[in-house]
Length: 105
Image (cartoon, rainbow, N blue to C red; front, top):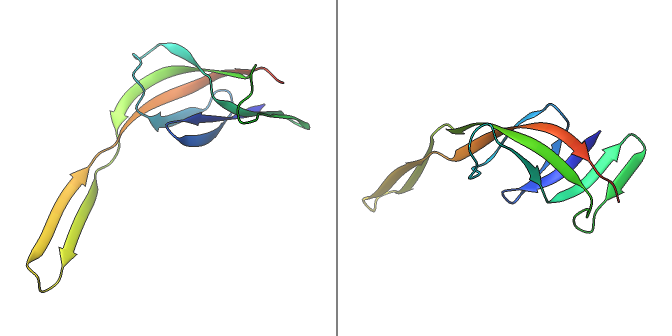
């Protein structure tokens, strides 16, 4: 069984037991919660597609940890104009474990 959920403006294909890094969620570690934006649930040949979301679809997950990704460098440079800007960015993330997928049409 698998599902397609939307979180943080991105779509993710998930299966039960999977660890997933999502955009930062404002939830404490160890808390379980439900995704309300379930777009698709599939189980073999039986596939239910929402328009855009399934009404009865539910994906339960548990917050494992919070963290920050690797630093990326942002460099702006214009040659011969004495222009150089440098900055860095570390995106926050929340690691979740998918517990259960339930629901259909």
